[in-house]
Image (cartoon, rainbow, N blue to C red; front, side, top):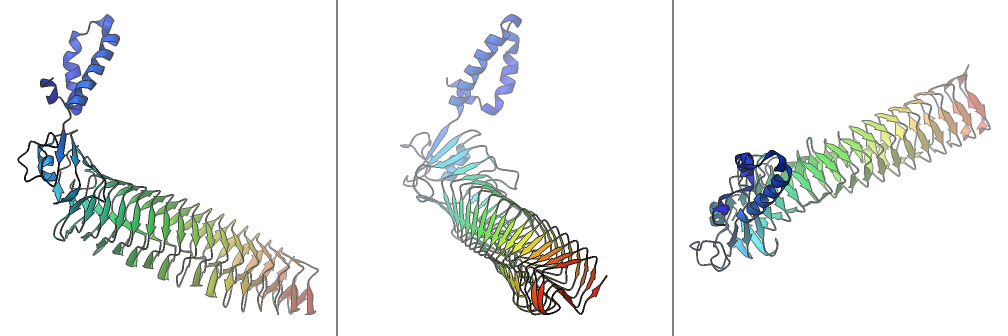
Length: 483
């Protein structure tokens, strides 16, 4: 078996081919199966296990047992070959470099007790030179106080499992750059530019907290699944995430940025963005592509929930902004916007294009309780409130929409704009219970209430139906042109 130790799993194919001439044709299937089984068993025995113990006096031991363990991880890496495993006891160790060897470096008792410390002067773990070199596996370590003026203060390359990366610094990727990561925690890392926690990484089940960057406080240009990003900060863009990142089933909460408190750009599926803040635009998301996401209690000057981008089957609730409490601009399809607040215009939405959306219970301090400006088709606007004008909608273009039980001083259902084939019912205002001004075509106005113009005030109505509206002056219409 001593000779067998020289064989490696990665070298099995040439061995099989070399022996193939020994197998008679009629016995090929039976003998080949037996031979491959034996060969795999030999390969399993071939991989070596190395041992590292910080309490050893030096690296003079051969590392094959705990009694002869290496003192440093690097010494074991230098001795190891592909498919080997390095076991590491508790302790604090110096930074390592593995040159992308296909080895596994595993702690005995986990990240809390096994630390690689960069001392604030060098990267903790250089496992590969770029984002395609991830052969080395590092499992159960804390990487702390790493520093580089390039990429990945904690780690570059490699595959990290159950690791903690904390207090690391870099130009890009404070915690990690170009790594694959599973069940890792990245906290308190920072960069000069992009990706406070991580940049160009693939991450599953990771937690990123309190990381800082110019853009992408949590991550930049990463792929994430089932991750949590909390309390990360970007001075410019993307408190939680930035760039062409892909996030599936992730939670982003309490992140802060100039634009895109939760994320700036990127693609998000089935994610929750809550309590994020942007000082300018996009409290939850800025110019992202979001599907089946929930955006709640986010805050910004424009677009409390979202600014721009494309949202499909999303829920925007209890967000706050001066313009567009729920959303500002962008394209929304089959979305629900409820309980959002705008200090000025567009409680639910400001501008943008909305299709098959429901806007309910939104509030605007000035105009457009449900929506201000924008293009809406087949939408439902109900129970929205504007302090001055357009309880349901203000100066928008609406087609086949329903506006019901909305309230404003002028135009309970709608103020201004162009409405085609819409229904305005049970809305309330001082002037224009259903509509104030604007051009209405093929619309139905019923059960609306106002002091002046129960159905409509000062508008142009073409081929419209007005029924059961009430007012002190002009129950159906007041100062309108009807044709």
